[in-house]
Amino acid sequence: QVQLVESGGGLVQAGGSLRLSCAASGSILSITAMGWYRQTPGKQRELVAVINSGGVINYADSVKARFSISRDNSKKTVYLQMNSLKPEDTAVYYCNADVTSRSLVTRNYWGQGTQVTVSS
Image 1 (tube, rainbow, N blue to C red):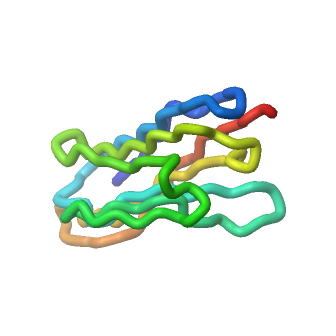
Image 2 (cartoon, rainbow, N blue to C red):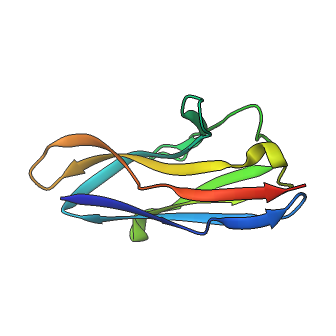
């Protein structure tokens, strides 16, 4: 079984920063893409940033130049550094990963989500 556990959410004032972490654990052989999505009530979950095993990164236009995604493969962890936060960044942030288990099954996994609230 594979689990993704997020941490680092919270309440911050506009203009502030937060750093999210997501650690994968379980019977893992390899992880390809790791990323962050966010969702607000009544809206679809949207991509924030994704990084593949080769280090190629994609960002949503709304977060470019403010957010930075990185990963530590030795720790099976992905990070999201969020700077210059805006009230519209308020959402539940979800970690996502494509994981191949030691039984050679590849699946997409989601974390449980972490709330980020930016006050104006």
